[in-house]
Length: 327
Image (tube, rainbow, N blue to C red; front, side):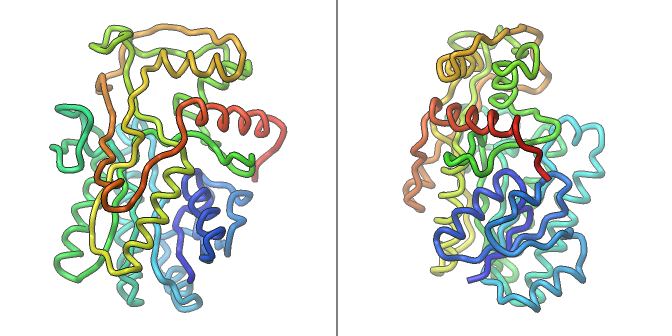
């Protein structure tokens, strides 16, 4: 079966494509390579293009018999979304609607959407449940929540079936070193810590040491990208087997402070890491930890990779990345 993967040359999308191919599906990747790499689009057919291009989408649906669509091509930088919200509303909302409408024109009604824990804003309690109050505090989170609401309306009005996965902190790399995280600029904590370990950067900054947490630093939920990919496969098969619209948190269910992640990186790499403590960033909540009980109960999903596994895979990938030039 052909599965259209929008953004399949990016970090999470490529790991999902790798698993799809392994399980006998044929990923058909559309990616404009603005944040992805052609080197990652090697697990199926690849088209360099944009989901804003309706003509291209029609050609793809006419050429391939598409069984379902997975969407990974949102812009994800919180800070940029604040300074340039138009870019985010156009790509993350308008272009997503364009993709969904192309699906409807061609009779495809099964959609996996990559959402985010940012839809919750500053949570009232932890661990976070799927039905907890949602109040995103930046345009990035708002765009994801808008699309979630659109998908609910499309489900009610048109029978359009979707599963939304709200990621917490996606981390790690493929254990065989084939693909991994390669954002430009890099803003995620674990790759930044590992850059400090390798000497690529002088230090790692810790934003806030006075949070109401055990060691004063912010606590987050880290989940390995291969575990995320496994959830997407389970969600896809749920839709293909007649399941309806739903939404799930994807996290490990365990929180680690910034200090704990740095300590784990020192333990795994054996390197000294220079830490610079600085003030909190506005809008950073003390805790962001998922309850993934719903995904375990309804999808049979449970993450298997612990924090040290995540860092070990990310470290091995970082060493590989230093020696290769991605295109």
